[in-house]
Picture (cartoon, rainbow, N blue to C red):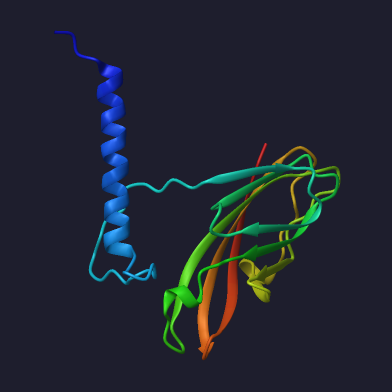
Length: 175
């Protein structure tokens, strides 16, 4: 009897998907769909980020944080200088007043003729302070080059149902 490798691979993928969903739903989501806290050490060996590719957007880009982990903006007629993130987890995290967590979002920019680096970040309708190394917004790379901007967003509960956002940003340029 010949072994059907395609069927075996598909069965393995289906099993891995079911195990991941079971792990995620049991450990990270409670009965009401709210993310539970996981105490103690745990090891993550890899993370796969969903990248949304877009072209032709200018000035301001608006994204659903829960739909993609990163965005690759290319072929923009003018530079992207404002990023708006919606649906960033806040209330779902069930933070106590004063408690804070860190989230990440990546913006990949193929620079147009006159490039820019975002100087404004809005999170869930609230203006977020962007902190760059040495408190200086870096210069963008030149036309056709790629800049990768990573925002480490600190979500802090400041009062009942009120949150503040601070983004520590870094940049790498390629090409």
